[in-house]
Length: 76
Image (cartoon, rainbow, N blue to C red):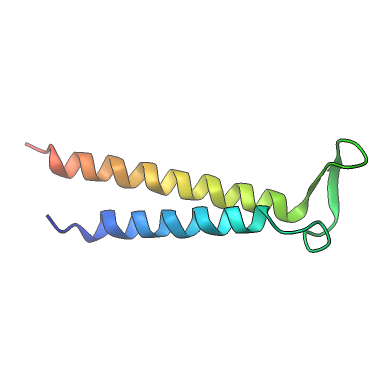
């Protein structure tokens, strides 16, 4: 069955997860100001939080697409 909503949610989920991972691998010089220091070598920076938000949204969209697909497939 062709369900454009499920395909759209899956495609958006893949794009958001890829964008989140790309943001997380940026070097420290590009990531912006540090927001929280763990020690001299580790800190949470502004773009790290954006990457986590992208990953969370991507996971939520993937989960929603799976739920939508199951409801459509097993509907009576």
